[in-house]
Amino acid sequence: MPYAVDFETVSTVGLETSPVADALAGLRANEARYFKNKYGHVFTVEPAADAGSTVDWVHEILKDERDIVIAARALEATEFQVDNIRMAYVFYEDGLSVNVMYTLDDLGKRAVGFKLSDGMDIPAELAAFKFARQKSKLAGTIRGSYFVIKKEH
Image 1: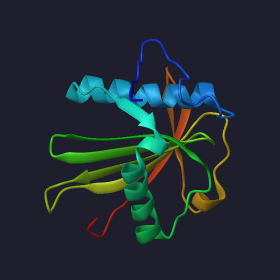
Image 2: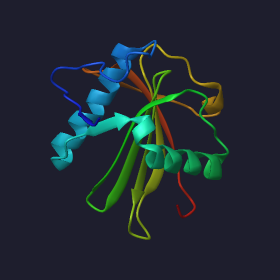
Image 3: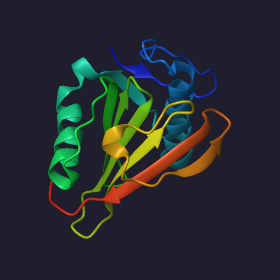
């Protein structure tokens, strides 16, 4: 069942099995606030089991571009379009958030972003990345990294 993420009252709905559920909920709310403020978009997620095509698309890009396979279990996902940009997010049980920004114009920006919830270790499959720190009122300290997508997906 889809869930509109409330960034004013942060909830762990759908993320309860995560050992860092509160921080992951804050990270998810931080994304919801960004899209609401920048694009007027309501950030709605659904269980990963109901969003198989979104999860598969994100995993296919990770595997094809960098031979990355995320070990953690996907809990939730969302996919939407804003300003000719296809966006996809997958939130994982260990506290990881992976997003794909895929501009539909041929020469547009295309990238995969990783965000680590406060309190989680860097997953082994992402050990080669350097993570920058960002403070968030909703999520505490977020560590983030990314790579540019080079192929068509």
